[in-house]
Amino acid sequence: MKKILKNAFYSGFLAIVMVSGFFHYNQLEHYQSDPPPHIGTILEPFSERGVHIRAKAYSADESRAYLKRNLLSKGVVPIQMTIQNNTGESYVLAKNGLDLEDLSAGAVAHTVNRNYIPRSIAFKIAAFFFWPFMIPSAIDTVLTLRYHFELKRDYAAKSVKEEGEVLLPYSTTHRVIFVRNQHLTQDFTLYLQDLQSGCYSPYPTKIEMS
Image 1 (cartoon, one colour):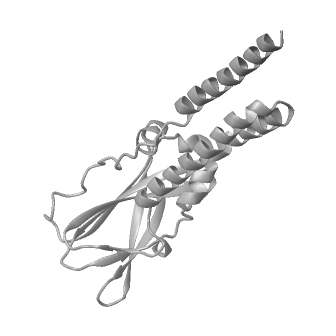
Image 2 (cartoon, rainbow, N blue to C red):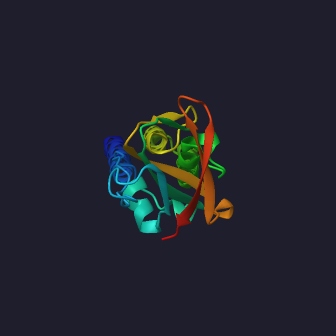
Image 3 (spheres, rainbow, N blue to C red):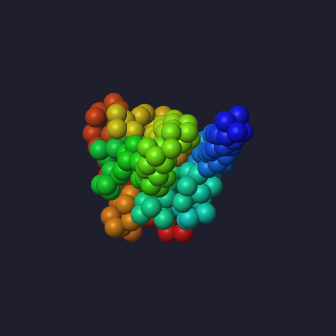
């Protein structure tokens, strides 16, 4: 009888591990980063001198396609900027040049991962009463953290940098701004710093809504 109970216990334990592993594999698969979409150049390449900026708010489908999550359902609107520098000068693009409240990549990733908090708590409560649930609880914690850091790294690569980046002459740059829905406006002003003179130039920009 003891042998039967022991075998049943280990079978149940193994089933919990296998089911939890399969569940987490499907729910938190390895994050695949995609480049921002091509929203079209404003002008034919280098046909007209100047800095030209286009901004477009992602739809829910575009957010899912290029950022792997529908951020609009979380109250965050991704806005893609295409900056076409058709000049011989270099400019610095930095977060302090935006007059929009741009969320950090870490804040956006945290907003996404808040969905997993109730499940994590449920696993921990279950583990308190039945110790084999410690295994899926540990798996959940590890995979959720991995997903958070992969998401944060991808969003940081696509967003406007705090420390700034150089827009080279005759180049086109794509960057994503993350704005809370309540702070979304129809337009904004982007300030670019001339790398040589250090002077800032304002570029009023209208946001195209999907």
